[in-house]
Length: 303
Image (cartoon, rainbow, N blue to C red; front, top):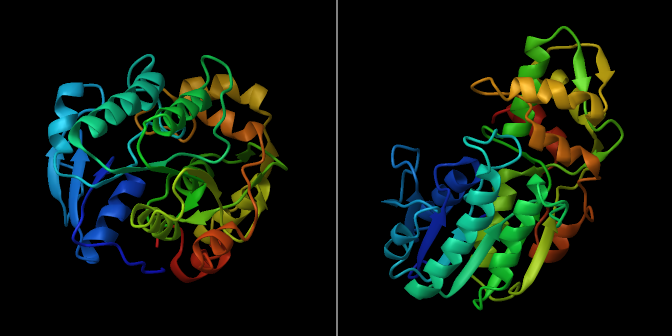
């Protein structure tokens, strides 16, 4: 982990603070002594080290009071492609409309900067696509009139990372291992390295006005990633290629489960190479990110 200084006198808010990335951001900032405000929809989440403020991206009236006195805002709240929609149209409402609501509230509250966490490969896509909702998040921040940075990582690994955990669940639950994406590539980034980039971007104007794709030092095919996860957990299944076109029906069925390993939105991520330049973190932020193989060897899947 690379510790990066943050101007601790400034008040900083983190949306989605009880989620996977947001929780790590709050912990890092609190450890550095920053004044952290965790903006969450459900105040019962894990947000130790921060002042917890309950607000909802879909309830505009709750947002401006939650951001009062805040200088910098790290926006991590979104429904990601590994989660099913809690209600019809939720991806668009929470991701796109919710971010527009947040930008409006940030301007009203006098926030001076927004750092957006998005995803690598964010693009306009079709009107109904999940990826379009992520593109609309970026558009809302870019057009906010405030200083902004958007960081767009590839697949993440680390403590409770969703994608490796989903692969592990599939390997443990099925006698064969379906491989989506096949020879498509991804570039896994350690969540703590992403947090370093987010906090550095929040504490400096050096990267303002940029959308920055991020990835770790290794580019793996989805097949290689699947094998790496199985090797790490000690479960070995025959790997069977599964084209996205054939996965749509199973994904819709799995979306009915409480904690599905695959949902329809996930399939959009297998339509392109989820990669960027291998040295992007070192070139942009000045440190060498952790290799996924080294991390899994030393810590296992969830370390």
